[in-house]
Amino acid sequence: MAEAAIARLGADRSLLSERGVLKQILGDQIGAKVDFEQALAMPGPSAGETQLRLNLAATALATDEAELARQALAPLGDSDDIDVWLARGKALIAIADFPAATEALQQAEALAKTDRERADVAVVRLGLVLAEDGNRPARSALRTAEAEGVLAPLGPTETAYLAGRVGDRSLAYDAFSEADAKISLPAPNTLTPPMPHAGIIKMTLPLSG
Image 1 (cartoon, rainbow, N blue to C red):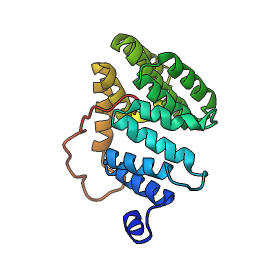
Image 2 (image 1 turned 120 degrees about the vertical axis):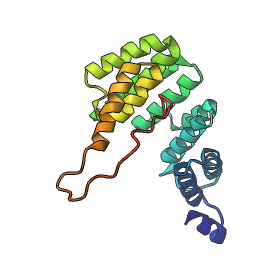
Image 3 (image 1 turned 90 degrees about the vertical axis):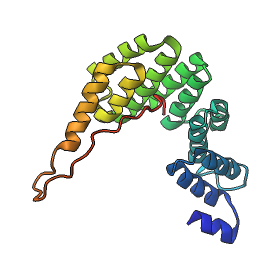
Image 4 (image 1 turned 180 degrees about the vertical axis):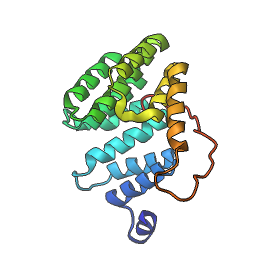
């Protein structure tokens, strides 16, 4: 839809942003990044600029351009949006500016209002521990967060990915098994049996993403 509108009407900030999001969803991170950069370079309403810059930062991190992500977020200044500080934390971890990343996560923690937001902060903080101190301290931090229930909003699949990233094979196995069991359970009050499945597809995802 955005593609057709651009072809018919020409590019503008809103249409480029929309097309970039579609490319992002489809996995074309480079194409999405180009659209977001072009959108930012064009005049347009400032109402959606925070999300546009967050989208650009996400695609920049996905294409290993952490400095671009940091630069994209810089104009947002002292934002009261937790997502801005989480994205800053990820970008600063990726460029190994650990003190600044710590400050960004402190800001994010102060803005966290829900259990899910606190879990998101904990995930990025684990990425900081992993990058700065290595696997063993990260495994310890993960176990502590898991025991305290901080990661409960993530669910077993996300927990399994986290555990795999820091090398906690036991927790990863347990969490994947829990997720697999949930998929295997038949839906209640159904008359037809569930379709067989091949189990959970285990993927390696970035801890900060």
